[in-house]
Amino acid sequence: MTRFVLAGALCAFPLFADTAAERLNQAATVFSEVMSAPDQSIPQDLLDKAQCAVIVPGLKKGAFIIGAKYGRGFVSCRKEKGAGWTAPGAVRIEGGSFGFQIGGSETDVIMLVLNDRGVQRLLSSKFTLGADASVAAGPVGRTAQAETDAYMTAEILTWSRSRGVFAGISLSGATLRPDADVNRDLYGKPYENKQILRGNLPVPAAASELIALLNKYSGRK
Image (cartoon, rainbow, N blue to C red):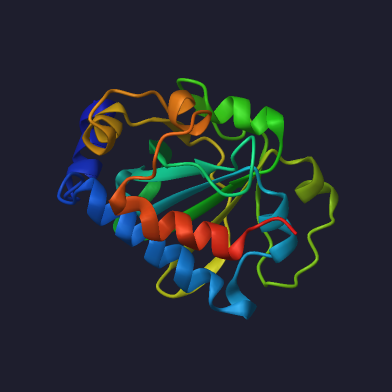
């Protein structure tokens, strides 16, 4: 019964209506709009420290007795040698929350992976935020102070944007896993995210804007 209701909540949204290229364009737009608003952006020092960035445009959240979250997005990491960011790997985020709630929304999500342990979690076949990797809601504002215990010890920081409001959000309990079907569409081969993010694959044309924006806003000094 629980599975039936959860499936009904997710089916309220057209989960597969957009293509990988469209989602990459949406991800680039989300990141550009967030970073072009200094008072409502990610602190620059965190971007400079980040080892990987995950962007999920239009995370779906439906609710009818049981809440459900589902989204498809992309991750890019800093290259091990040389400057710049890698070609993107595709990811899926899934999670549920029980509660009496009716309604739905779409939320853009950005995550920064801050250390090696977080990267290893990201490269695994599946992990749960808050259980397998420590996660915290990120601070907002280009010059916001991020030197607090929560931010210094968290492996992953998360933000969301919904209806024009950008804020830190806790995604504890959500799971993140590679999206093999999208990787096959982008690269013509069923690459794993570990191969993409730890290799030197050329950036697909559809991802060029997103990677250019990551290079522009989060290059290490």
